[in-house]
Image (cartoon, rainbow, N blue to C red):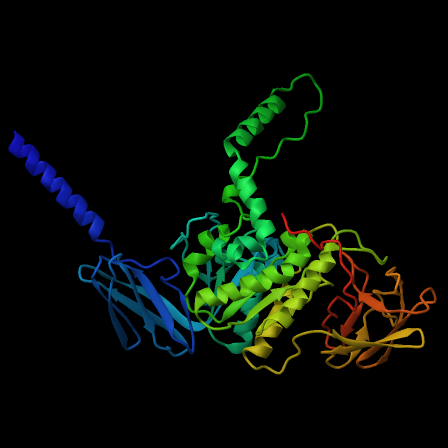
Amino acid sequence: MNLLKHSLLSFFLFFLFAHLTHAQLSLPSIFGDHMVLQQKQSNPVWGLASPGELVKVSIHGQSHMTKADQKGHWKISLRPIPVGGPYRMYIEGETSKFFFDDILVGEVWICSGQSNMQWAVRNTNSAELAILTANYPNIHLISVPQVGTQEAQNDFKGEWTSCSPESVAYFSAVGYYFGRRLHHALDVPIGLIDNAWGGSSAEAWVRRDVLEEDGRFDELMDGWKEQEASYDYPTLLAEWKEKVATWEAKSDGERPAQRPRRPNNIMKGQHRPANIFNGVLNPTIGYGIRGVIWYQGESNAARAYQYRDLFPLMIQHWRDEWGQGNFPFYYVQLADFRAESDKPGDSDWAELREAQTMTMDRLSNVGEAVIIDVGEGRDIHPRNKQTVADRLARWALAKDYHKNIQFRGPSYRSMKIEGGKIILNFNHVGQGLYAFDSRKPQGFTIAGDDKKFVRAEAKIISSTQIEIWSENVQNPTAVRYAWADNPVCNMYSRDGLPMTPFRTDDWPGVTFGKNRR
């Protein structure tokens, strides 16, 4: 009997050891059937195998052999593959082999940010037409699920699919319309990776140690440490259930109270620093891409001054992690939102837009798509995602694909004071400055040394200059344009691109010093 027990135990230990040391040959979900590889560059491919196992990857006449390390990780780099396809990739280990089919080579873009990037095609203007005509077998899509965690994830549940009326409806609208524009202009396959998460804060997209070691975000991180130490989700959940039970039990004819909202678990949510970086972004880092399009900022508007540093840090952090150089990063400035106003005043959204614009002075190979004319006062999610995508596509087509196309609207360059008036000079005017729907420029305010802004009169005096004045300000020192949550403004270039909101002063704003969420 003892001999039998010993034999069974030995067999069990042998089986357990073999199971632990012999991993199934596999690749993460970012690789698979229908994937798109970035053209004109080397593309990494990686996965898992048994420690020390020889792994061979072959595609279009090239083969690469490597050995898995002690933890079973392996990685190879494919040489550039001609644009087009479809190709087949073979992956072979010592005990198993398989292949991926329908692989295309073209342009790969990540579509990232919060809900306005996540916003699906089915919820946009003319959605039925967009879905009906979405037969693009050479545009391929993949979405990364929303997983918030402090532990770095190496894989996700998802798969590439060919663009069709069935697959596009729930995909990122900005991403799809952007990719469709590139596909039409370049006539190459397009790969789109959607990893957006509604309501996400920029700090959630950054590795925690990067934020902690920087020094500029100590107040933000200290606030989070306090929340993490005291947060009690089970108690909050129990209290919510009790409120719901009380609400459901009402039967005395009184109108029931509004149903309580289920409490969010901030520990797993889209605001906690590093949560999205670890759970959503990390499994894709290193995959060959052309660049990123980004639509986010609403969740950071209350800390706009902090965003001046946080946003460029995030972009550079991604570039450092990817190890693919300063790839292009094009982002959407916040749209107009809330009640429309032509009165001078303070605005956290205006300050966030300013922080976004400043990023172009902080980093190279970035660009801002201005949509101050696209928003909806009563909806934070404008349905016109086609215009948003078009303005992003202009940046990519001009900067990365060398198309002769205007890619940004008028932007403030300099000012001078002359006889109680301020003359503003602008760059990027294209065919010249243009006041839409009215000959009179709207959206300008002016102030003197008292820092009290009033509505200003304005006149276009040349293709690059506007004259600003007010009878109520005899000695003007500063001008602002479109400085409100939802400003009344009408300045464009004659190419149809809106003027970037700006101010000439640097007086402290309403979000100055606000560093905690």
